[in-house]
Length: 332
Image (cartoon, rainbow, N blue to C red; front, side, top):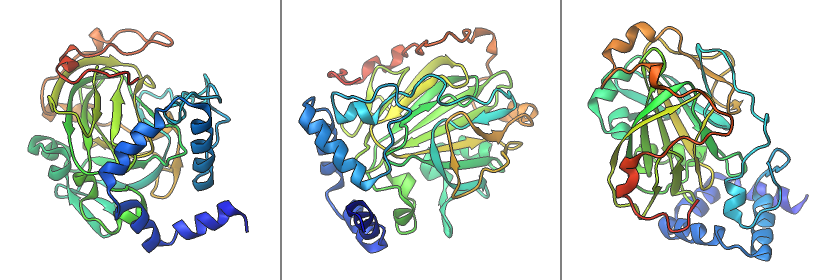
């Protein structure tokens, strides 16, 4: 048995895995990892990536570059052009990220599942009763990014980001072992509730990137702040940023989870089921039946007339409302 296989066998034992990844000083370890990952020393970077490979199936074959100044640069790597084709069907919501599909299905009585037998109230996650009412009978999908996956996430459709609500919290592991043991885990962890208005229907789509141990930092391209454990506000950040399907929205500093919520009329695409794999750009949900239901969506309706045309390589403009946050301090 190889060293890697032996390590995998040990850490896959549920009690040991839960102990090693949760019953530790989670916030301190997460902050230490953030510091370590940014050290720009070749031997530190090489040693950390070598250790990382022992615990994961890290494959850099699709990365735009394979030599990195720091572990952080490897975590947040970009992919080669064309590595993730985007489903062109306007009636399809594309997956915003590479992921393992977790719990998914219909929002029922204001609750969804984090694992079999473990429901949680949507209000605890989103913090907005109006949003909870809007998604009643709608669809949700849990997308878990493992540590070795591509960590950037993208717009699942032509849309306009209207608001980001940053909610500080804990840093529990979000793997299946923890999801079966910690009630309301996603509601406990640090997260951002991102409201996106779909074009041209005006229906509201909500993405919730959830941080986890070693991950408590996320960057949104259109905000000039880094959302992390030391971020002190503002928590609700108004936005007015147009994004084209497949355009980069941001990234995690490590692996984590994105929850996707679509209103009544949406349905999961063929082949999307719990336990499956999906890549950024592949069909996640069909949303071509929700246009007539968008009148009941919270907030204002918008037109796609103001959405700028797609420009290859264009980065979304940053919201001026993010200027009240802390300085960037050299973070990307």
